[in-house]
Amino acid sequence: MKTLALVLLVFVSVSMASAAQPVVVIVRHAEKASDGGNDPDLSSAGRARADALARILKNSGITAIFTSEFKRTQETAAPIATSTHLTPTVVAAKDTAGLVAKLHQLNGNALVVAHGDTIPNIIKALGINSPINIPDEDYSDLLIVTLGDKPQLFRLHCSS
Image 1 (cartoon, rainbow, N blue to C red):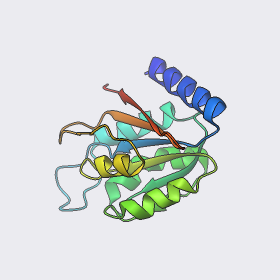
Image 2: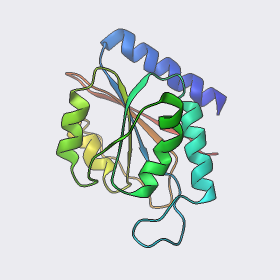
Image 3: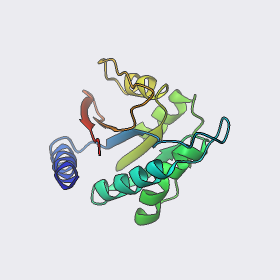
Image 4: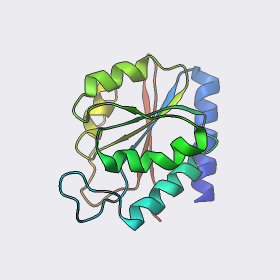
């Protein structure tokens, strides 16, 4: 986990220095509880993953956090929001255009906590042509996009 944090920090630092463009870290919400209907809380494993995400992103210069209207995305973002003293901006899960417009207005780095079925559209709308597939049981990808004229994607798989 420490190695992953170091790799992410180096990547973000190099990207910022070379391109002076914002970096967007996109993650799927952490593991959700099996009960709770359409809007469940995180499971204990999900809460642990959210805490790990906050540790990984601690020094990454996050200045904005975006979640959907669902509890699982907000609970995933909560530890990093607390540690950075940021209030997440809620954007409807299906409002990809609205989210991307906000991301293009950034002056700093952002975290986006989204859903397995919305992340591929977000990545595509940010100008990345590589198709992204997130299996239902996978909560471990960190997708890092540098914005700008030629957006670039860096994908990390963070299994515990």
